[in-house]
Length: 588
Image 1: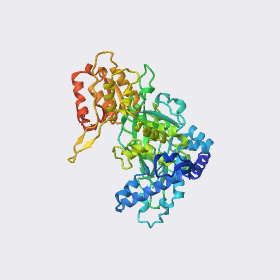
Image 2: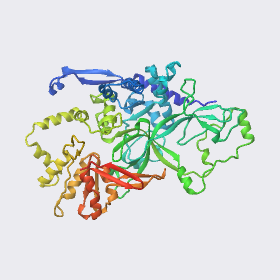
Image 3: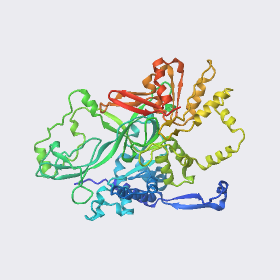
Image 4: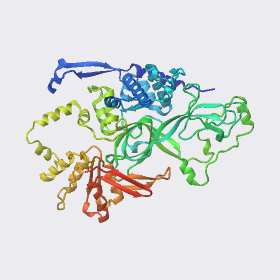
C-alpha cells in the first residue's frame, strides 16, 4: 500500500505543462554592418522562443555526444567546443520569474512547500525531457542495444534561479524552513566532492525480496521491515544495498548516486550590522552544481533551509546511539500478517535519545552574485534569450567551463557579459580627449589631489598582461602598490574606496590584527569528518582580485615575510599536518 500525494501529483503535471508550453518574445537586431545601425527600427526582428524545449535539446545533444565519446568516437576540436556550449548534462535551469508570470498558483505552491514538492519537480523534468527525446529513455533500448542505455542519465534536476527576493545569511530563521529561499553570501570553504545516495534499493538477505526506491533522509535509511509477510526480517544489517539496476532492463531495481559537496558560506561584509560577528551556514550542493564556487566567491544560492539531526553531537555527548527493540513481539507478527506496516523510519537508528538538531541550506542553484544581479536588473526587457543568460551565469560567470577547467576569460566572453547600454557607453568614452586623466580623477573623487597615487591605483585596477613564455614560465601581470605617506593623508581612504568599488574578490584587512595564517591559509580540522583541511586566508580569498592591507608597517616581521611569496610568485605553499599543497593567490 502506497500513499499518493495528490497535491504533489498536481504540481508535477502543471510544472511539466509549464516546461512544455512556456515561450518568450526576444527582440534581436539583424544588422551586420556598423554598430549604429542597431538603433534603426527597420532592422529589429522579434522571435518566439521556447527556452526549456531548447534546453532539453541541448541536454540531448550533450548526452548523445558524451555517449559517442565514451564508445571511442573521436570528435574534432570544433565539436568539443560546441559540446561545451551548454553547461549542464542533466539539469534544466528555470527562471522563477517565468514561473510567476505563467502560473502564479504553481509558483506560490513551490515557494511555500519546496522541500515537499522538489521530488515531484524532478519527476516532471525527467518526463518532460524523455517525452521530447525518447532516445534518452533507457526503457526504449529493447534489450538489444548492447548496453547503450546503461550509460544514460537516470536522474534529472531542476535549478531554479532569479528569485524575487534575496536574503542575507542572518535572515534565515525558522520561518524559512522548508520554503523556497534565495540567500547571498561569500564562500569561505569547500569540501571534496563525494557520492551521495539519493534513492536506495535494498535486498533482504533472508528471502531475497527487493525493496526499491527508498528515499534517503539525509543519511543512510534502510527498510525497517521486510515487505515479505513470511520473512519478518527487522534487522537493518540484513538488508543489502543494490548498487546496479536489475536485469529486467527497467529503471527500477538499482540505487541512484549523485555528486555531493558541502560549502561554508559566510555573511557578506557589507551586510554585517555594526558590532556583530559574521554568521556562517553550511550549504549542500548536488549533482552538476558541485565545483561551481570556490573560496572567495560571492554567490547567490537558491534552495531551502532544512533541519537535520546532528549525529556528531550525539556521538560527542557520550555513549553511542542505539536503536530500541522493545517493539518486537506480537506487534511484529501483526504487521507481518498484514503485509508489513513498519514503513521506512529514517531516524530509528538514532534510538530514543534526545536529539540535537542543526540547520543546513540545500541549494539547487549556485550563481555568482554579479551575474545574478545583472540578470535580475535586465528583466524581461533584455534582448537576450534565456538560454544565453544561462550560459553567462553558469559557464562564463565564474570561469568554470563544461570540463571543469579554470581558464581566464577571453575578450569575446568578457564582451558577452556587457549589456547594450554599457557597450554604447564604452564606445562613447573611447573618443573622449584626455581619457586617462579623467579616469584617474574619478578614483576616490572625495579625496582632493594625490593625482599620482590615483594614477597608480587606476593602473593596478586595470592590471597588466599575464604572459607565458615558450618554456612554460608564467610572468606575473598583476601590479602591487604600496602607498607611503604622513598620517592623515588619506591612505586608508584609498584602500576603502578600492574595497567598496570592486564588486567581488576584494578583501580588506588591517595588518595590526592580521597574522601570517590569516593572510595566507590555515590548516584546521573539519568538525564533521575530523580530517584536516585548508581554510583560505585573505590572499586566497582575493584570488583574481585585490587584497587591501592597511597599517602594513604595524605587522610583525615574520608576518610580513609570509606574504612575499604571494606577492612575487602569486602562490602560497603549505606543508602542515600532512598536507602539502601549492595554492593560487593571484591578487594585487
